[in-house]
Image 1: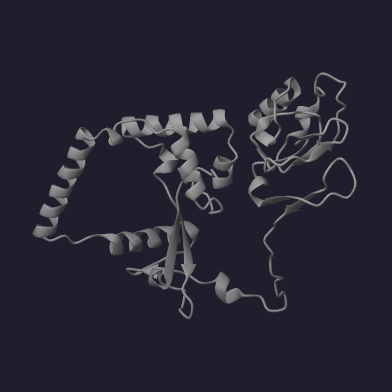
Image 2: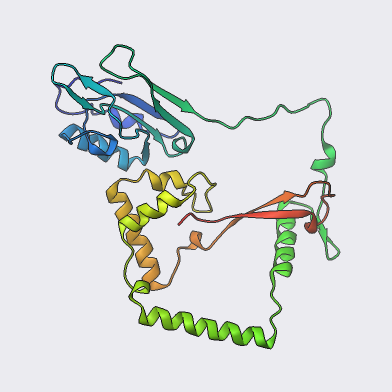
Length: 275
């Protein structure tokens, strides 16, 4: 899309393009430091507000995409944004100059390859596999999940000796004592600490029950990051976690070379909130 620089405001129907599974690219002559411009103009502030309101991801890396040979200036006028469901799968790359004042942009949408299903041999043995435990047989997915839950609860239970319990109590007292006497446990987290954590984190992991992907946190603007830090500080100070932060999506994976009729034949992966 393109919007001439002599028009003051963005098109009134621009927001209608910001829908699910949408990618927007173009030159709206909208400037803002968030996508790499040296300054912000009213049109850039207007576009940034729409991007924030619609929860879109900015794909630009902050590199200039336009060079003015008349004024010897460079700006990132060509913006690329994607809806939150596509943003984590997008790759954005600037290519070498081909003679235009705008650099070419390579935009890629990475999708997982799916293997073709062999329709000649229906895999009925997998469809008809049932789980059994303690004399109970699962007839549906919910009952199978309950059996897996009982199995994980059984193998995760700790049998502590009296000595272990005493060590646990003493350790707990030491931790609580440190929290009361050390300022590092009582002061609020800051945005720069969040940014340092983002830089050290693997942001491409699958999200937990809250459906917040690491790339969504990475693409938050400064105001959004401050709000996120405020939520974390509120949770820390009150000693309470949001419900979805306490939950996990458990995915059972069949062990190789094993039959699949018992919970012991599965290993699990727990997807928790990135927060």
